Length: 125
Image 1 (cartoon, helix red, strand yellow):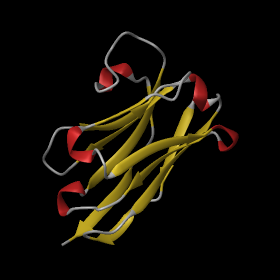
Image 2: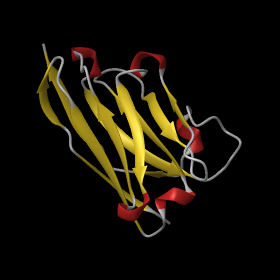
Image 3: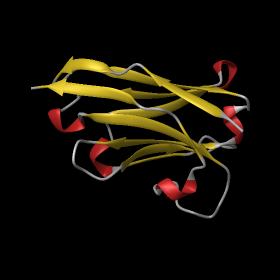
Image 4: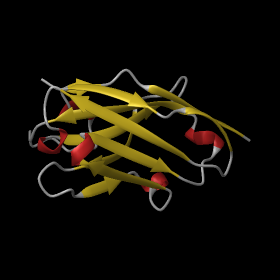
């Protein structure tokens, strides 16, 4: 099993940046597919980005392309989400998740077995 802890959320003005961290313990994070999801108040959980385990392949939701970057530091057993050009609509709780190969699209929460507790991101306009 792997345990995930997110950090780095906070309050930022529109146009600003934040870097979220997802620190893993218990297992090596590079052996997992890792995804970031978010849930805004009153909305469904939404895919943000993912990074594959073995080759580091990444995908993003269309609305995050060019603004968000997912990356991995294997030495620190941590996955990051760099968020630039933040907008008020990016306000949400952000979760990282890890899972093994399942054949399920990494854009689906069903592809992930382990979840962190979430970190709040609030963007003021």
